[in-house]
Length: 233
View 1 (cartoon, one colour):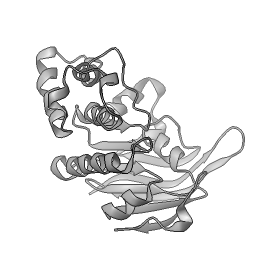
View 2 (cartoon, rainbow, N blue to C red):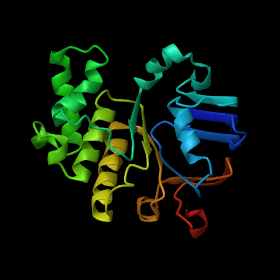
View 3 (cartoon, rainbow, N blue to C red):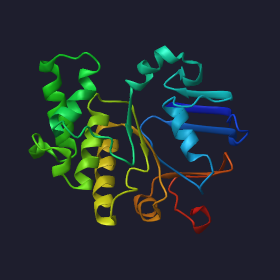
């Protein structure tokens, strides 16, 4: 089932830089997709358009039947409630515990405490951190902090999880653990995952769909692709 449709999409910034130049792309519900390409290929712009930090200059970006580019600023929050986003820099609140960091995402939605607790425990269980409820971010390793971020991103059971270089600050062994968590979420929860990355080892090991961007257009699309040398930074 088609879940994301990007059609004749262009993004030209005010300085004249064309980051996306006629992109056409379809992603089905439940897919796990890597987005790769050299610096300046349009990866970051594509990711930002998916969660509506940027709007296309022209064309369509549609998620679950919603034309994201047409959303008014005051209604963007409705889209983001249906998404989970994981960044390279963890963006955890340092004065809150692991539990509180994950719960905060639901509190912002106005959810009651009695509803929040089981959701938070379940999310932390998915990422293997149920025993770290009372820990603070500075008491965790980098990999554990990223797992908290993933738990926060999936706590409301989003249909789409967007990961922007989530292993960029992690060592290879820790990165492998993070990818195992994401793979389990994709398989067990059916969550569609789109991940931008420069990590060749991860892409080659996971054998997922690989989309290659080049100067803002789709240059390659492989069902079980590899990270070729030509796509490196």
